[in-house]
Amino acid sequence: MPRRFLHRRLAEVAGTALLVGIGTGTIVAAGNAGGIPQWMMAIAWFLAVLVPVALFIRISGAHLNPAVTLALAASGRIAWKEAVPYWTSQFTGAFVASFVVLLTLGGGGHLGATLPANGNIVWTFAAEAAFTALLVGAVFILADRGEGRGRWRIVLPPAAVGVSTYVIGPLTGSSLNPARSLAPAVLSGTYVDLWVYLIAVPLAALILAIVWSPMSVDVADRGPGREEVTR
Image 1 (cartoon, one colour):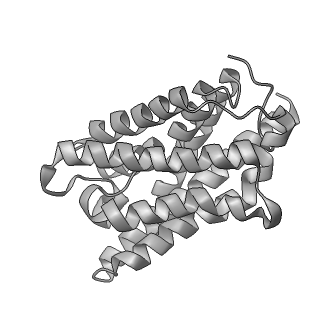
Image 2 (cartoon, helix red, strand yellow):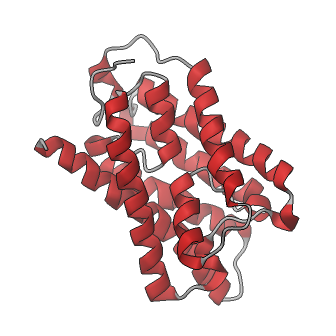
């Protein structure tokens, strides 16, 4: 395996582990402490995405999310041959993080697993799909236009996650990320309505990828961690 591909995979493992560890770790810690305001949870998830994006975007593109990788590949922004290595790295990072959370903070709050409030599957499906589209749209802007002067555009995906956490977090858990939902669910044995997140999120990402083609820019201008575009 060429060194650059190894570096990308390791960056996705580490980045996804940071995202899941900070985010779900906050959920578990907050539960152990008796709860925190939702705005604080939103900030925690904003930072959970921003930190690994800032650290790894120039190595792997900082997908950190199988749905994001799916959308980038389906829209032609990365080559399909990159998708599977990214997915395996992301799920690996998520499981490592959830295991560390379990060892350090205990298994409270189902390890931060996502659960529909009051079992409302229809609302959960619609809300997760809508905010996944918002997240993927933010990623597409960053992928097509680059980081921007002062790297300000790297804030867009974390902001989408933070807003989602604040708005739908109490109702759906605000997943937007199959790896983030699957790892704590498996390690805590919480499978209730897990399928909703594993279908709604990738489906929304795929639909947006189909309707939002990449801008006509040189591949090299789309940032690091991207192979030549092939359909």
